[in-house]
Length: 246
Ligand SMILES: CC(C)(COP(=O)(O)OP(=O)(O)OC[C@H]1O[C@@H](n2cnc3c(N)ncnc32)[C@H](O)[C@@H]1OP(=O)(O)O)[C@@H](O)C(=O)NCCC(=O)NCCS
Image (cartoon, rainbow, N blue to C red; front, top):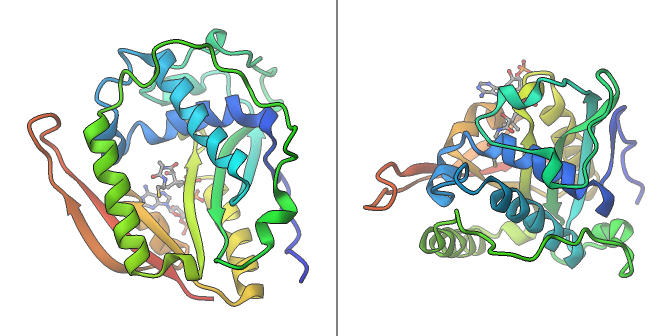
C-alpha cells in the first residue's frame, strides 16, 4: 500500500547525509543521561566521538532493515553554541551552508515490523558510496562495559515486549539549536501515519528525559526502568519502554 506524502522539509536520508546526521546526533544526544553514561569523555576525544556517531548511523543504514528520514530548516551559524558537544566541521568533509540556507537539523530511523517490506523500498543501493572515516583509534570516549550492558538490556526487553511485531523507533534526534519547532513531531507523525496504514503499534525504548515529548505525540509508558550508576558513572538513568497504538 502507498506511503503517506512526505511533509515539507522532510526527505529520506542518503549516505551523503551521514556526516551531517552524525553532527546533529552528537549535538542532540550529548545532553541525555543515557549518553553521559555511555560516553564518559566525549569532549576529550571530540573527533573520535563524532566518527563513532557517524559510524553508528552508517552501519544501520548499510544493513537495509531500517527507514531513515531527515528534516531540514534554515541554517543557524551559531548552532554549535547551543550544544555542549565539541564539533569541529573541519575534521570532516562537511561544508557549512550560508546562513539561512537549508540544512539537516533532525533525523529519525525505525525498523518496520517483522515481515514488512516497507524498508526494502528505501534500502540504499549496495554500491552506494559511504563515507570513509579516517582510520585511527576509535571509540576512546566510549565506556564499553556500559555499551554492552545497554545493548543486552534493550535486546532482552524489546524481545520480551514484542517490539518486532510493530515499528521500532530506533533513533530520533533534533539539534538543540532547532528544538521546539515541531521537527521531531513532524518526523514521528509520518511514521505514525504509515503505522496507521499498516495497522501496527509503534514502540520505543526512550531516554527518561524524552518522556514529555513522547507523551505529547501520543505514546504511553509500558514500563519504567532505572539503570543504576556505578563507580565509573555514579549517575544512573531512566529508560521507558513506550508504545503508540494506531
Ligand atoms: C526529544 C526531541 C527529539 C524533541 O525534538 P523537538 O523537535 O524539539 O520536539 P517538537 O518541537 O517536535 O516537540 C513536540 C511537542 O513535544 C514538546 N516537547 C518537546 N521537547 C520537550 C521537553 N524537553 N519537555 C517538554 N515538552 C517537550 C513540545 O513542546 C511540543 O509540544 P506541543 O506540540 O504540544 O507544543 C529533542 O529534544 C532531542 O533531540 N532530544 C535528545 C535526543 C533524544 O532524547 N531523543 C529521543 C531518545 S529515544
